[in-house]
Image (cartoon, rainbow, N blue to C red):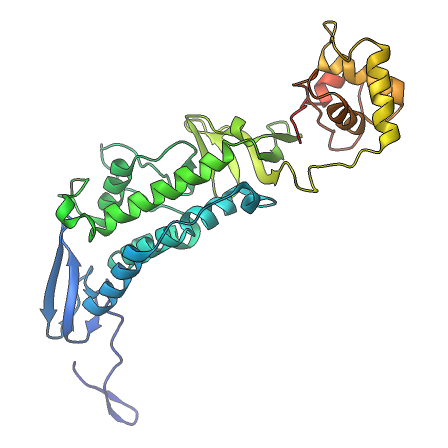
Length: 343
C-alpha cells in the first residue's frame, strides 16, 4: 500500500473495507462468487480489490452462522397489535436463519443490504425475462417459489451463468440458494399463521371506511403486501384492498368486549320474542341489527357484539362497521359493514 504525504509527514492510509468494494485491501485469502454460483478461494497480495471479493475469515464466520441458524416458530399471539408490513419484516426478514443467510449474501453483494434492513428487494436488470418474485417493497401473499427467487437473486448479483437449484455438492455454500430457501420458508410460515382462525385485520377500505375482517380473507392469489405502508393491493392494478393494516388476536382485550349479564339477557329475550333464536325467518343481518337496536335502544356496534355473544350458532355471518364520524344514516347498509365473526 503506497504512502501519502500528510501535514505531519508520510502517512499510511487506512485500508478501505475489502468486502465487495473496489478499493485498497490487505493481503490475504479472499472468497469470490463466480458467475455460475460456485465459490472461488484465492490469495491477493495487495492492491485494488475487485467487486465481490470478501475476506475468507469473515466469509467463513458468516457461512457457519448461516449453516447453524434455525428458523423461529411463529404464533398468532406474536403478531397481536403489529402492523402487517412491519410484522413481515420482523418475522420473515428478522427470522434468525433468514438474517444469517442474508448477512452472508450482503457480504458478497452489498446491493442486498436494503433487503436485510427494510425488506426491499433490489430491482432486477431490465430484460425480457420473468418478473421478480418480490418487487421492491411489494411481497406476494401466496407461496414463494424457491427456484425462481434464487434466480432473481442471481440476476441482481450479476451471475448470468447461474442455474438454480445448485448441485447438492455445493448447495450448502451457495448464498443465493440458502437465502432464497430461508426466505421462502419463513414467508410460508408467516402467511400460514394469517390463514389461521386466530387473527383479524383492521384497516381502511377503498372508501376510507374502517374495516375489520379475518386475515384469511386477505390471502388471495394475485395480491401483494406493501411492507412499507402495510397495504394489501391487487398485483396488476395496485388497487388497494385494505390499507394501514393492523393485526389483532381474536382473544386480545382490543377485540374482546365485556358484555354485562343484564344486557346479554335483554338480547336473548329480544331474539326469543321475535322467534329468531332458532330461525332467522329470512331476515337479513341488517334487518336483525335494526330490530335489536329498536328493542334495546343501544348503538349498533354494541348490540351486535351482544348478539354475537348471545347466539353465535344462529347468526354465523353478518357485520358491523361504524362510520368514521360515529353517526348513523338512513341507509344503514351503506354505512355499516356486517361482521359476525367470532371473537
